[in-house]
Image (tube, rainbow, N blue to C red):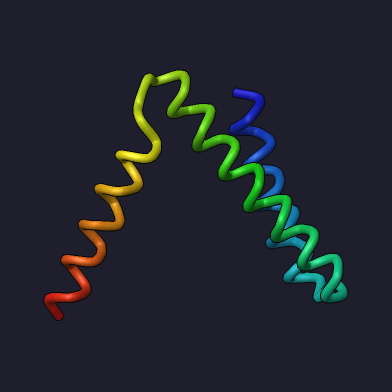
Length: 71
């Protein structure tokens, strides 16, 4: 719950920063925080659910590649 809250708050901060047109350095810091918290939440959820993150990502990328390669 805490990881999800941190993730959502970091994305809200990024969107707010973009709307407020903050400096590039702050944008990079906000985007980095959003990316790190999202990745951490993803790994934590996988750990708690017992799902292999690597296998899930591998299947996702394979599906996306097949879908876009066919077009």
